[in-house]
Length: 440
Image (cartoon, rainbow, N blue to C red; front, side):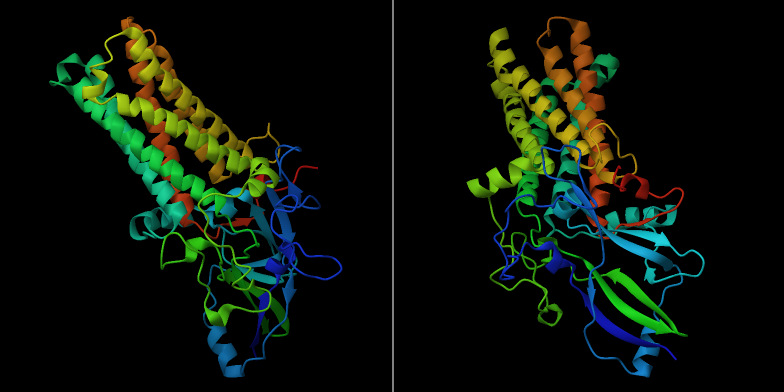
């Protein structure tokens, strides 16, 4: 007859730095956040590793449940669970910022299963469920969700703006009075402002990453017909994304969920508005993801200048070519360059090597689409310096059009990603796991 032992995972404890002699926790940010060693890798050797693979570190805890309780829990077994030989945790710096917890599953071979895990989240059915979740789930307390939603909203505004400035050039008969100057200028200001708000939240997300190491999965030992299996299921996240009480605060873990492996209140990561110089120098300036977020915020801040000067009352006073170039077109070029750098770094952060694309990782595609969008916005500003040429004006407006659509596609993918908190990679043909294996 089946029965169940409940036991807890000590992976968080293993991820924390401790004094080898006293066993006491050491301050955060001593050395690299993701330690060098077996399973750790990153695109650049001079920056922190961006990913690490590690097996579960488990410690048995709790009393054996009664036979009836065991039967009841086993009845909850889902038909689509995967019988697996091995399960590994995949730590990515991007996932850590987003409150995501990825695992790698090696399916059972030759009746040698040790685990029961959720099915792959990269199937067609799982993807459709994720798309449906975008319309039914709205965790406004989750800063990662807000970042994705705000960038999506801003991209929609920029798409509308691009129709205002490009369509009259393509189809002159469609133009209405004040379409390019007034409607285009106002939507440019709104779009740039929304991008600035999203970039600020992106930085807050970056500096409030979970530092102690959040496992994010619950496990229980199942013994049935003489076969001992470990069931793995989503649970136990300590990221601030779980805090539903307020946007800017630490995760509130239920008292019953705490054990000796979890940080105490004094050790728990508090919300911060900006890191200290020590944290910047020893950790963040070595993080590819933080550098990408910083480039995005700087680019959006400079780009906002062009959005502000696009307002009709202001732009109409830029009567000289030098004034237009300096106050309107140049900020677009500088801001767009920041978007290009940011998108490139977001792509590289997900890669094993700087030259190997991670085509099966959502974050890579988000960075790729944002990179192309940044090129479009930069090209628009650069062509604006030759505004006297009608061909350059047309191509600049067209660059805003396709660049806005690229930003929108990347933002929608990021929206999907922000709600996919427990991705499961199944190690088989067609899975995503090939992009998560360390390169020899």
